[in-house]
Image (cartoon, rainbow, N blue to C red; front, side, top):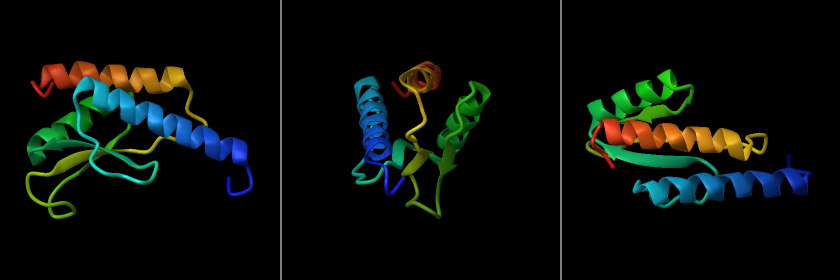
Length: 106
């Protein structure tokens, strides 16, 4: 990866695509300068439920809650890679939309 400009470009392209998709759905991704993309949910129980529902929909994104982050700042951690396709990212974004509506977050 360090020697491949193509893979680095694809990684950042996928990162921007996912971040913009989440923002367009109404989620906050906070300030991140790496491909690791948080989706801030807030409440710890809701964040954990959100992560579980994502998994049920075929998307692995780990819940990060207190004490790893401040109380009430729970988030789901996403890590796009250079090998994700746009179709894969669209599927993840679709799950975020469905579950966000289900849980009354968007």
